[in-house]
Structures are given as structure tokens and as C-alpha cells.
Image (tube, rainbow, N blue to C red; front, side, top):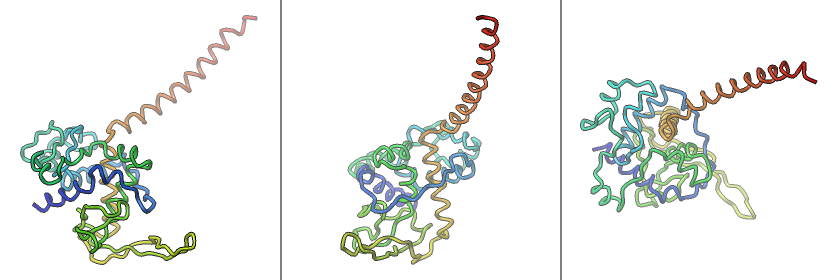
Length: 252
């Protein structure tokens, strides 16, 4: 039930209106871990536990997690629900009827969220996700009691608050165009979570890396193959040049 509540909260924050919102702070750089198998495995675990209750990943099959080093047994025992089969797509556990009743529409599919967010927001999708999931803070002026620096006035409470704890933003007052404005300078931990801030950032980095990998699982393989193809073409160009010189050397 606890995971279901967290999943419902996440669905509210990752809805289409959230993607259209403009951030008031610079995006933090998400760690690049799409080649880190341990990070991707941890990210997959977090995704299944905290996202898949309400969001689907309908273009991703559970058995594709073999590509990040998991066996069918590990996937079946740790990352699937009792009704799922290893070859099934990552469907949401909440029924469409319940989703429509709770939100008025079904929560968005997250398979391509890291790529689609970049297309809509004009900045890195992973950077936005990494910033959004780490910048929740308590705000008694909002209906949920939570707010977010990457998406101000979000209707979504912090779905990971038990892991992160509670934090409060710290500001510096600066002059801008003749007016005094507040600029975010950091965070103060108000209530500890089950993870330290460093551990939480590490885990969010893993989750974002998995969501980035999930959007294009073949990207790393394509890049590796592309490097070898370019090296082959470079060597072939040298060989072709020498063959051409040898062929024409006696022809005037």
C-alpha cells in the first residue's frame, strides 16, 4: 500500500502538465552511468518499486533487463509482480479505470521519458529528472505540503520522502535590476531519511540512468559498433589510397 501511495504521487508529478512547466533553477548535471551495470540494476529496482505501480513502460519487456546483466531468475524473483511473466512488457499495476478515477486520465508511459522531456523542455531530459527528483521541499502554503524547485507549485508530494527525508532551501539575497531577489544557494537537512543526502543522490542518479537507458537500450551497443566501423573505414581508406597509388604509378 505504501508503494502504491508513492506511485500515485509520482504519477501526479510526471503528468503532461509537469513536463510543460519551466524550471526556476539551473538543471543539475545527471551522472552518466548508462554503461554501469550495477547502477542500471539498482535503477531498475527503484523504477519497479516506486514508478511501476502507476506508470507503465509499455515499450520495455522485463526480459530486456538481461542486457544490464540480470538473469531471468533474478528478474522473475525481484523485479516482476506475481502475475507478470518474464516476457511481458512493463505494464502498470493500477487498472486504467482506477487511474482515470484518480487523475482524470491515465498516467503517462515512462519508457521514453528521458528523451521526450529533452524534446519538450529544450534541455537534457536526464538532467531535468535528476534535478526534479532531488529538489522537493516542505511548503505549508501548498495543498500537499510539498513544493519543487525544478517544477514550482507542483501538485505532487515527494514520492521518495522516506528515503530523502525533509529538506529546506537556503537562499542568498542579491540585487537584480534594482530589486532584491532570492537565489538558491543550497539545502538544509531538516529531517533525516533512511538514506544520507549523498546516498540519496547516488540512488537518484542510478534511477535516472536506468530511465535514460530504458529510452534507448541499444544506444551503447550502437556507439561501440560505430567506433569500430569508423576505425575500419579509416584503415580501409589508407589501404585504398596505397592501392590506388600502386595501380597508377606506371601510368603516365
